[in-house]
Length: 193
Image 1 (tube, rainbow, N blue to C red):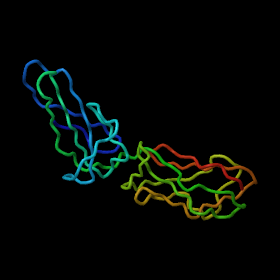
Image 2: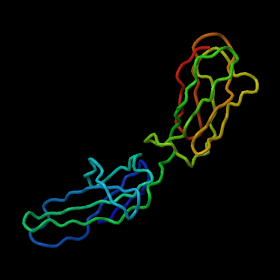
Image 3: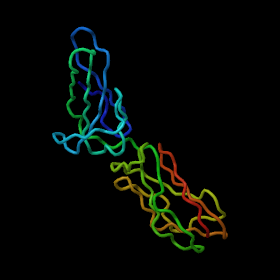
Image 4: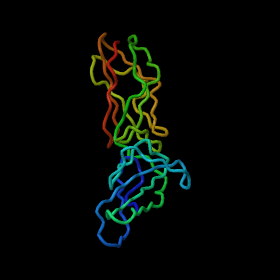
């Protein structure tokens, strides 16, 4: 049994059986994908992963994956083969932003407590290799950022912390949006000024 594809979160792995011989021909083929935290360790079955393809989940990050293929011709004993382990599962490709520490109600021209925005893959796993530049802007509300506010922050290990955002303007409900080139933007929860 062999596995093709890239061992990374969100990617599809494909199992291929080796050559089989015998009479009558193969009547059924089953698959069971498994994972382990070490390449040579004990592998546990991945629940529900019983097809010839497997989409690597965020919970597989850092693990190794194998597949066992079992064939039957309905007469002879079943034959099974287990693949070699994949390389260690890598994080997925950065695709979106997520606000994980939200702004809260504050007074006019007051600095918010840290607002945290993470760079994530399609499975909502933080992409720790990302250093994306993330920019904050006011999506709704009648105000502007205070002078001296830092509105662009580079992510460190996939996390951008906005530590001195400050809004001045009319009282009311506001929403911030965070954007980075090539990534799906993220809006904050609404808050009052």
